[in-house]
Image (cartoon, rainbow, N blue to C red):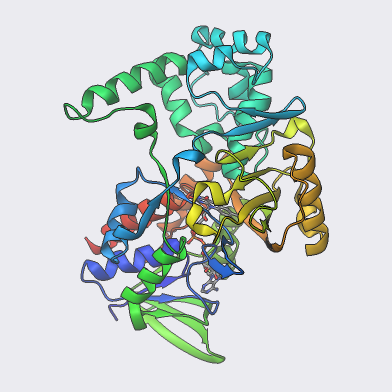
Length: 458
Ligand SMILES: Cc1cc2nc3c(=O)[nH]c(=O)nc-3n(C[C@H](O)[C@H](O)[C@H](O)COP(=O)(O)OP(=O)(O)OC[C@H]3O[C@@H](n4cnc5c(N)ncnc54)[C@H](O)[C@@H]3O)c2cc1C
């Protein structure tokens, strides 16, 4: 009984299984659905390459490079087009470019003058009292003032969490901000000092532009599915699809895993088990063993989100400039934002077709995700028309609804995760990984899966 059972074939479980096997461990992946990838899936239809969930990742995470290289797809990484550099916010009645430097911010009209000056007063902000888990909104108001928080900070969190900044924990969602505060008191001072330090640390002659330091947005030719397919190829028969785990029981120093595979019931004896499923599934599997642990895991909330792709025939609408736009909550619009997918990655559409990927719902407007597909397309079209002036009729539409899409790291999240880690010690050989705990991005999932894989292999 030496096999390690990894449950859940999203990017977390796939990466972990790959890591364990490449370090000489016998690991098996069990995925409930008929395909691998979890919420990463690329579909090709009518001259459009669409992503059902995530669209891109930043190329600054070494673990993601290591993974791509390990499964032979590193040379298929594609960077965003330079035309996607500009980003927009919808505020005060129109789309406005997000300034890319402090001087540009001071001159821009992204916020009214008083609000821009209030941001500069951030230089005099004091530190938060020790040990307080502040909401993102409270932290933002303290540092940047109410207007910049409601417009800028809310837009940034919407683009990652589709959340509610009054309930998200700043420490859990943007730990880099609280680190800056702890180390430098002021975020502006801290940002200036860390950029200087990073530039100094670069080898002589290396380009050290702020963009380079932040990383470049990337995908793969063939979309993010290319990475999943690489992992699937490499894992071969070690990855089982249509294999839904229905029960777990400690047995003889290891674990008995009950699996419904291709309609039949099977039992697997494993030395260790890793749950790389969404938290609510992990909670269900752990409940018969440990109700308090299951309750902690189940308490992680998810925001629903609908992805509405609107594709336009060549020449029917101008190709939009920039990465896309975000809409802060105070605008009370029905769109969270839109990605100019064909501008960011021109190879994702054929022959000059234009693709907008619109996001609807999130923690603030969960009910919109319950609308039927026709209503979601109509909503996205109306909003794109009013916000971005897109009047043409799309020749292609596709709607994907994630009823529990993005985990919400609300106030108390870090304490909850620490309590989960402590409770897991009661169950030797049982582990958790995935986007619900220590980072929601693809890079986070990959980095955390490698870290767990290395620990288990050691
Ligand atoms: C709309 C959307 C847009 C996003 N955009 C981005 C982006 O642009 N960039 C970015 O970095 N991140 C983005 N994310 C986040 C990122 O996609 C996810 O955090 C990441 O893909 C999650 O991977 P995971 O493996 O942890 O979980 P999942 O992908 O949820 O995988 C979990 C797997 O477990 C399986 N499973 C469930 N129950 C069982 C069971 N009983 N037995 C066996 N298997 C089971 C599921 O079928 C699933 O395949 C986005 C997410 C969404 C929803």
